[in-house]
Image (cartoon, rainbow over all chains, first blue to last red; front, side):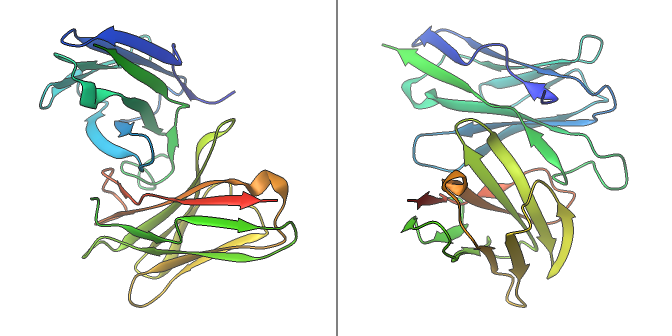
Length: 118
Length: 113
């Protein structure tokens, strides 16, 4: 199976609520993780990244949490808006340094479709 | 707008044919990546170029090839096309190969009939 996967293929939330999208990874040596958002008809768009020496990183309305003990990554979106409707991908870098550490060899999960209910 | 331009947006062709997909990276970006997206396989990394040189290879078939030209634009050539090659092909660019923040184009939808 693939090393990066998602717990739920579809997540439906009410507008204004917080969303949590989960991702599991299998390689404990992975040291770099990224979340991308893909809206219908568009290419993936970078949201936020985190390195394995961090547990949490915050952006604008988004927070990524990394739990290395259970090899779990999550993306939290605060006050979900209609424009947040998209497919969200987590990506993992599994190449060892010096080959990895960036975009080299990123492995993407299949994605979670976030649906915003009015 | 990511700044990455892909042409054509749609391509319909027949089995056995050969097609070329074109990508212009964001201004100043030296690294170009090609990805294939299908419903069953998700987003699969194909190949990466950095400043004209091949840097990394993923799940790219031997029937597929790519190159990055001196002006940094890239082309992905797909030959002896099969029905299973129908997919969305994305190009992405980044400033350096270590930069995980990729900028993706809008993709080329390839349909092999």
